[in-house]
Length: 226
Image (tube, rainbow, N blue to C red; front, side, top):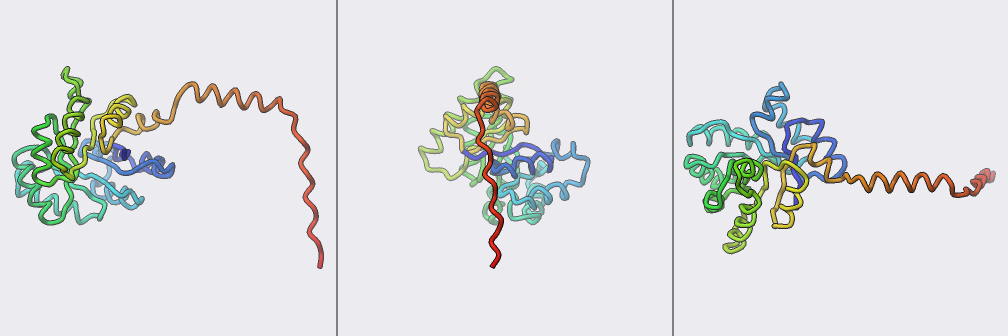
């Protein structure tokens, strides 16, 4: 499973990228607005870190505007995937963008039927928002299970990008169900590596190590003179 950060913070992205566990980044207008910087500057700086997949979202709602914005975003950097909303206009725009070789992340997906249409028009990623479904009393993970079955039935190339992740259990469940990608906030990704028993075990090992007799370090011989 690929792990993406859902953020526009270059500092957060750099920290995970340097660890070596990050496969991509998803952004949206709300996340970029929090940075208080020019949109294109933020996106370009993220791409320049070397992240191979960076999703940047259009804000237009009609086909001509989506196409104009999508083409512009794709020119910023080769790592860009254009995020397009799941609407009839978004489907039309996605079909055209894909015919031009531009990769699309279809976002705001809440049903299997929507995801089926996204795959039909050639979206590279489909982003089901599981946390928001949970908020409405639905089982977001049931949608991931449905998508995995449908995409496998018809050999669609579209990758399932599990979005709106709220906690590490969402990541675990998505991985078990065969989600291709999980995108999450920085705080959730941090927690993936944490467990209280790991901290307790490490503290115990270090405490015990202090009791182990230590042999004196051997003196380093002086270099021979020729």
